[in-house]
Amino acid sequence: MGYQLNFAPVWRDFDLLLSGLALGIGMALVSVLLVGNLIGLVAAFAMTSKSATLRRIASIYVTTIRNLPIYFLMLVAFFVLPQQLGVRIDKVHAFVGTLSIYAGAYLTEVYRGALLALPKGLREAGLAIGLTESQTRIWVIIPVMVRNALPALSNNFISLFKDTSVAAAIAVPELTFYARQINNNTFRVIEVWSVCGLIYIVVCYVIAAALRIAERRLAIPR
Amino acid sequence: MDFARFFADLWTARFALLEGVGMTLVISVLSIILGTILGIGVALSLVYGGRIQRFVVRVFLECVRGIPVFVLILACYYLLSQAGIQLTPFQAGVVALTVFCSSHVGENLRGALLALPRGQTEAAKAIGLTFRQTFVYILAPQALRQAVPAWINTAAELVKASTLLSVIGVVELILTTRQIIAIKPRPLEFYFVAGMVYFLICFSIERLGRRAERRLALPS
Image (cartoon, rainbow over all chains, first blue to last red; front, side, top):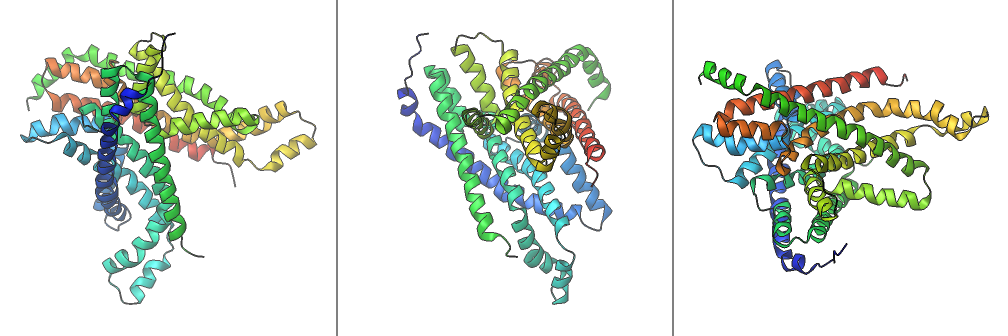
């Protein structure tokens, strides 16, 4: 077989790949770390609340989203909803919205588990020193719960970051999109996909390592 | 929304839709079967393999786990044809999903095998079983019992990942839906139908997984 490895075309467009990676990380930060986390926390409290209606709504949200493919959700957000509502949505915004809602459902499960694992005394202690119910949540329960949830969060963050690659299918210019473009323009198939794969692997490792450090720093001393 | 007209369109498209659902199921089932076989190999090499075998399989596993499924699918599609293996999009997709599935199954089964208490192996040795007998009669049944719930969840993951094959031109449910919409422009309704199908498949698998978890839990 006369295939000669030649990485030059890939290096020439390496800045494109990096800009794609930056967009992917940016989308992941906004939709997972910011919005998804917020949705997850709120929905987790809803799921463990006393009100049956709130519990029902939160559990319908989580069950629905967790049982639908992200690619499907993205297509709905990009093709169907804007048309129905008569608005134009930028593809990056459509994907960030999709990933936020998708991440929210998965993070809800994580936080719900962490909430249920907390000792009852924690809330009671907060109330006993005179904090209101919401103050107790924000200043007592959430800090302890998030620290306990960190190991499970780390897996979810990594897999949600990997899901940003799906955005390439609606031409969001992130890493996979550029890899495919370079592939189609230069036919350096082996080179471009090995570089692209390696970038993803390295980023996943970095996320895992960073969260492990955070985990150790923030672990609750016993 | 005019329901009568929509149902007429749905009825016209029924065979195409069924074919799409069938394709999604065929792809998922095929890659689960192949991926499980490969995954068992991965787990056995990681737990019982020699040092080199362990290292090679570990590198494979780490690579597959670090790369998004979508990239895996695209890479398989483009790479295999470059390597002179002419595959249809369907075959390339099954290869990609098989690899993806094997990494999940391998990691899962490895954990289950390693979680077994050493005393089990020692007890088996003490009553004179060979390694093969120990594995078949003592270790494998317990490890499988532990691994089945997560394995069922992997099946749901694969059904969801199979949607991505529409990008390389496999006519599964998503691509079928898009093709139907190109002819009968009712995106909301047809996407809703597709969503319901995915939901029902994944939801039933998830329920099955929970049931298995309850039934198979080791009595403690």
